[in-house]
Amino acid sequence: MGGIGEALMKKLKVIISGGGTGGHIYPAVAVAQALQKRMPDVEILFVGASDRMEMEKVPKAGYKIIGLWISGLQRSLSAKNLLFPIKVISSVWKSLQILKAFKPDIAIGFGGYASGAMLYAATMKKIPSVIHEQNSYAGITNKILKNRVHTICVAYDKMQRFFPEKKIVKTGNPIRQDLLNVEHHKSEAIKFFNLNPNKKTVLVIGGSLGARTINESIFDGLKKIEEAGLQMIWQTGKNFPQAQTIQQSTFNIQPFIYEMNLAYAVADIVVSRAGALSIAELAQVKKPVILVPSPNVAEDHQTKNAMALVDREAAILVRDIDAKNKLIDEVIALADNNIKQVQLKNNIETFAMPNAAEKIVDEVMKAIREKEKV
Image (cartoon, rainbow, N blue to C red; front, side, top):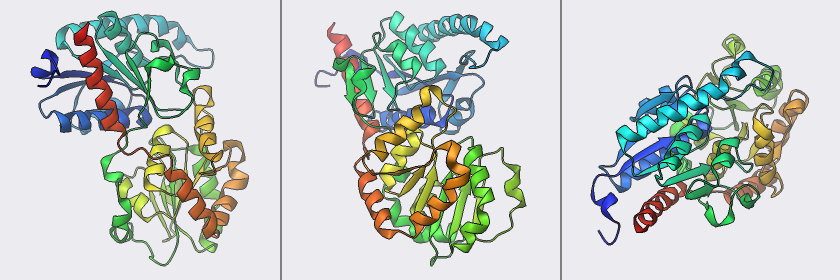
């Protein structure tokens, strides 16, 4: 096996932990798929938070998952915060039991509180551990783990502000493989979404849970969008019942879009939150984007993600607080400005790192090999 070592001669066993949002889950699944592609007999076990979306999304992707009783601190004063230390201790204890039963060769963490408990337990047991930080501003879980893990994979430059420089490897954010070369599927997408091929298409995505400010801004501006001669694909999330009242044929409205490859293929302009995964996908599909960062995230990291693009003229920023007054006008202005669209497409492409999942797998294998040398 060319020095890969005993751990890789037998069937490799990997624990992957992360969740809470699609931004943690989808990169984790992408790395699991890259591991399987490289080693078809690899055994993978996911560990997540028992009441979060990973408990549904991971099995749908074909992987086994175990849930931990863990959740984050509430920002407001809440009795739930009194349970936090108990949940942490309980989750670390359960993680140790999982490690004892599964006997992994390596643990990989993608952020979120379940990842914190599992990777902390793995480092206690001296199991090689790799974490991945999706955002330009590091999350609290990964900052806590920084001195305990072997390698820290990142998607942005200047991450030595948060992590030991010698542990950092820039890999990018893993994205779904069906988002590569989406431009070849435009005619298929026009038929799928029943669109007019002669009109420009605006794609509005607020993340897997929706985005209230974006939804309300778009809802209030539907007449303006139609009068501007634009058509729209709009992912509202599940908590926007007003969408059911809209009858206009120029709007394709869905709570969740599973065929994101087709949605990106036909989009001329995208309106999106500024989650790290969304930005990685937008860079890969090379779309002019107006970013509306969510204000409801830790340390306002979506604004920091967005500014990394805005500073290189790779995106337009509309603050959440300004969206109701400005978003529709920015969409229409960008739709009318072909030169600006080309500039944004060319500049956002420089952020694309299409082989991120494979690069993370490289670091995983390297960490296992280095552990064997000790």
